[in-house]
Length: 529
Image (tube, rainbow, N blue to C red; front, side):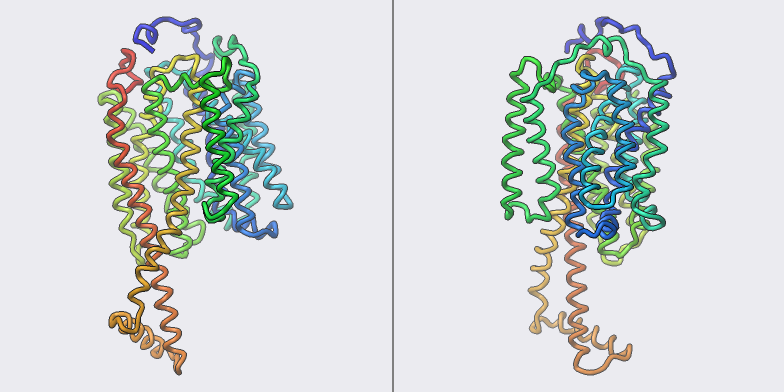
């Protein structure tokens, strides 16, 4: 879009919401916060869900997979659904049905029931984030969007951070069912406030439906659905050693490729890919995808490391993440002020540099690492995130034509969530793979012909005898303990590798930040400058 087009008055440009825009931003963010929180709060409760419903942990993960599949599909087509039903009406339907599905999940008596209810919950939850962003885009003028996105950052960054903490506490103190029941009062309040405060602007009310693009809808469903299943189930199925994963990968590839081809040529596509003609929006999607992958991956592997390797409870593992959420809330207003004096692309580059440095520091894990050091590592990582979400969101929509806000918000959210799922899958798979690599390397030294190994065995055996153990079994017990220590070291090295690789990804993104426009359509605020 040219500078003339950006500054030209558009129909309804003098429209202003009846109620305070900041109140509207808080209300719509409340709904999105509830949904994003639910994507991570369930993770720590999966073992408890499996035990309660008499299923294996592997089977219970389908409760997470079903949600992600439906959520990923709807994220992409939420702009079209908003046109079809009316944005406010669709937003209220999503909040109300998400709340109902949360209640049903909490009352589920079998694995089949919770999978079906989570599928429905993901379907309605997928419309919350894009509609939230779209409403904020229309409620605030471009000059104030940066500050408004600071409110949405609380939902996008803080919710995944608090999810494991809250989920762990509720699961330890009460029951996994309450992680779903918690949504009910929040959902009821959100429906009531949205119905009163939010209104569709004139251009939304007058927007004509694009009709039903059956081919585009089918291809998106097949492509993104299969991709989510492949990424979520890949580790459990042995990745490409499994025929099932090969089939999912093929369907995902053909579905996504076919969807892109169809959407570019269809007269009334279900999603308008013209949004990617905007340089800042396309660049913003790349940045938010990288941020999402690192955010969700690190939010999963840190509590996983704390629980499985350091033997923390679910509550304490979640508490490792909490101070990072506080750091984000403190830093976001500061970043907002920086955006008024610095080019936003410099701020984004700084954010990825801080994140890369923090991840590099986090790669120095040791077997005797303490709680305070873990908290410091996570807090430094989230400091980088505070420099990313608001500036990236502001840049992405700065020069996007208003008529494309709905599709832009849908695709922007889709990039963040889908690549977040990819980040989780790749990081957990890499932990397993690198553990095996390090264990193979360390095992070559576990030989009677290697003097340090023999010395270590003798040391363990002496300690066992000092504790009262006697007989020939002492050496066998000592050997077992040394082997356990080797496995623990291999696992710690694997987690360190994942943080190191994540740091490399963050550093690689930095040069791409400077491809964003230094100035956007002549707007002094809200763009890349």
